[in-house]
Image (cartoon, rainbow, N blue to C red; front, side, top):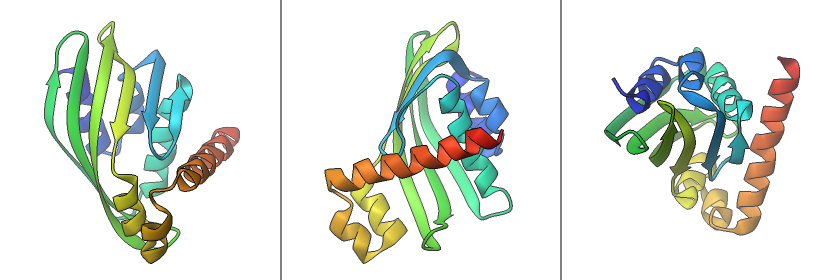
Length: 153
């Protein structure tokens, strides 16, 4: 099993430590929700997210895993309730990876923020989901949550 398959198998099993073990210590992660996270913060993001989903309806599926010694990609989907609005979300994500020493050194997730915002927030999400203001606010909020979580650890 290659490192990308290990990463998503751990994700599917809600094993944040298994996910973090797939990351190189100098990993750079980026997605529309968190922006860019480096090093331990990338692993901590998964720890925080999976901790918040324990005991809740949360499911991950992955497919189309491709990789060689230097790069890879995958498609994945997350199904969960967005807690602030208690709305069901089905997020479809495309991931791209760079590998170093058999580990993930660069992980870029991409998804349609407007579609996500519509599912998570309804009509309000439709109105603001495509704006730069929304993305900046989302990044600030998610990074604030991560900083609080890390401070408690």
